[in-house]
Amino acid sequence: MGPDLHVDTLVTAVLTVALLPLAALPALGVVVRRYGRLAGWPLLAALGLLASASALAAFTVFPLPRPGQLVCDGGSVVAGWQLLPLGSILPIVGDIGEVGLVSALTGFAFLQVFLNVVLFAPFGFFLHQVTRWRLATVVAASAGTSILIELAQGTGVFGLYPCPYRMLDVDDVLVNTLGGALGALLSRAVASRAFANPVPVPDLAPPSAPRRAFALVVDLLAVTTVSFAATVVIVVSLADGGSLSAAQERIDHPVISIAINLAAGVAVVLIPSLLARDATTPGQLLLNIAPVDVDHGGRPHGGRLATRWAVRWVPWAIIPSLLPVLLVGELLSVLARRDRRSLSDLASGTAMRSRPALAAARAGAPRDDAVEDPA
Image 1 (cartoon, rainbow, N blue to C red):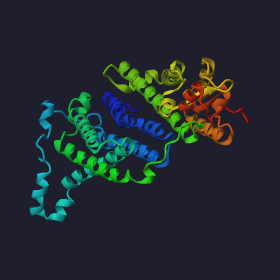
Image 2 (spheres, rainbow, N blue to C red):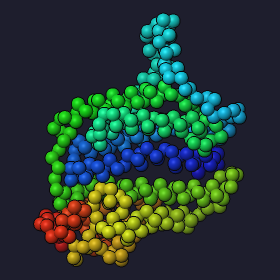
Image 3 (cartoon, one colour):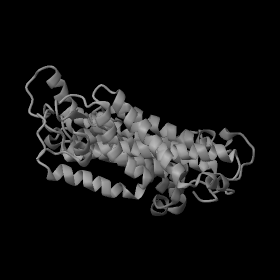
Image 4 (tube, rainbow, N blue to C red):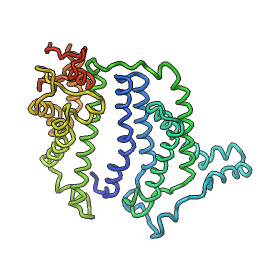
């Protein structure tokens, strides 16, 4: 955390940039529940929605103003808003007669409009591919997303900055919505193809390695986001409106960092798994999988869940740089073993199964996911 970093910059990064990508995460759950697996094209569409949401967040919020760079005149926030429909587009038409078609179409004003359409087209395309909503609903969602973005820009990220650092332009809403509509129209044509509609399966087989990996990544994103947010809150509280560098120095100790990471892991992963009926973490719930006890195939007791959590999260909390090693070790174990158990599975006496398979087992239905003994 550099000495020139201000409170509003930190809060903007935590609350705003992550908003659209986090809102798009349920797309993975939609794919799993609709098809019974992470099917090829639907999975790519879900990842495309995540990527396009991340791009919207990044391009519309960044670059943030540097400390001292933002100059406010004390006027009304709405004074700088462009609220006249086509007010920033019609001048482009007028420029054609003055500077010629080529110059007008290569000028900054037209390129800005064009890029706004291009930026929202993938969002509309992948949103329709994942949800299969009606065209009008996707257009409305694109318009709502654009309005939210414009309000963030026109209010200084909803008051986090003393004045806006970008202008709210009603024409941006129009062209963004147009981009979302064009993407949805293209998606509707693609949605009729066979590759975009894989045959659903009952989802009774053991979950695949990619599905388990996505669940772990979702948990990791949630834990790291909460850990970073908690650090920001603590630093901001200690700074009390002053310099963040001095406040950062007060908590810049390995023990404090470890405590924050452990607390985030407990709050986001361990406690939900202890309380949930199927002992699921947020990522496992999203991907519709759950741990089971290898001895009796039922819900693991608290000690085994705590062991699973400790094997995965305590080393990361102590030495975050160990994360790649831990992830690779978990993945290699799943891929190498016949029973598909990871290191945390082996240490805790658990295995992973799909939640539909667990429901079928509770109902006494035949299933093909019996827990195998360790190889």
